[in-house]
Length: 159
Image (cartoon, rainbow, N blue to C red; front, top):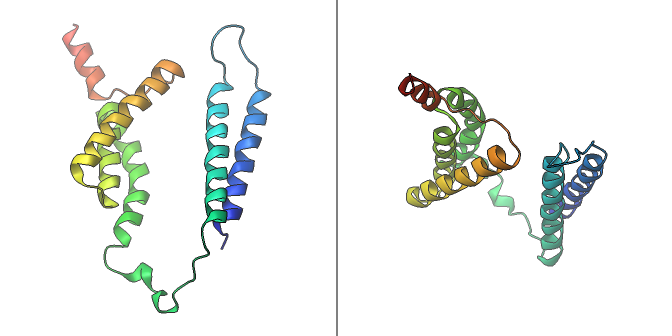
């Protein structure tokens, strides 16, 4: 198993390679081009990877507890794991019907609650991040996100 130093350095390297690869994409004379999103993601990946590596160098090594080899069998440990595995298919199935603005906070809140975040905090964070993601993807990157039944209701009202 890799330790955090190796993982952090690998993530940073992948981020740098992503930024370098994105720099080779064509850029339009006006506005953001196809290189914007991979450049942002690559830069963030490089920063997070570096932070993981630096943090692991600063921390004392953690010794494994030989009596704690069955941590994964404890009650409640499977809930976060299963919730992560179900989150993506749930989003894929629900987003076209409910729309991004309803599906994202539902799925994200459910994940945070599964990981032990209080439900009020989970809902507040989910709504805030949904708004930020909507603005970034729809307004900045011009990525169409599904509206679901909201679009159908708007079309029905406008008839």
